[in-house]
Image (cartoon, rainbow, N blue to C red; front, side, top):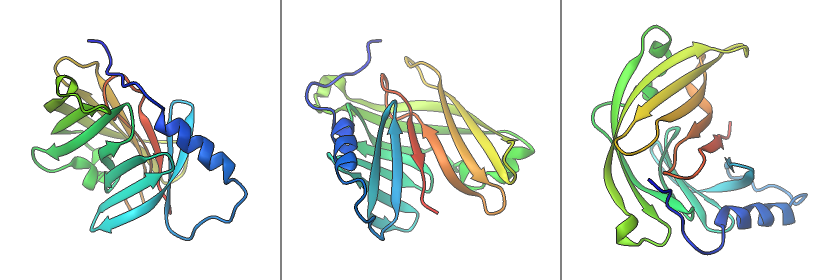
Length: 189
């Protein structure tokens, strides 16, 4: 299957240029989320918080919605995640037991090209996933790997670096659509 591509400017490249232009200015006090997509980097600021749901915006119109450490929606990228829902609990909500035993999860994801052309939209992509955790060389940090399969897509590997003392994810690398590299997120303390 050919990757989805949309014509027009690259919003993450714009975000990267705008971030470079403001480098050296005093950082805002609100939480910031560091984003990397391939070689592109941008800093997103918190727009909205509701329970564990966060909405982050980077310069250039890139928006990422997270639920805890999971990317549940994106906007402004060539391929957008428009919806994510779990069929059952998300094992990442309590990652420490994954050190002792793996867990399975099923997630449904909706995607759309930036153009929102109906022919490129896909709804209910079913991801069957297995999550496992291992220790790392960093004291108190565990790595949770989530390997997923979905019909018609290449296998997906998501990774989450977790502080085992509190179960908080400090960094994550996640699939955000077919045909684009994984999105790396560095969460604020």
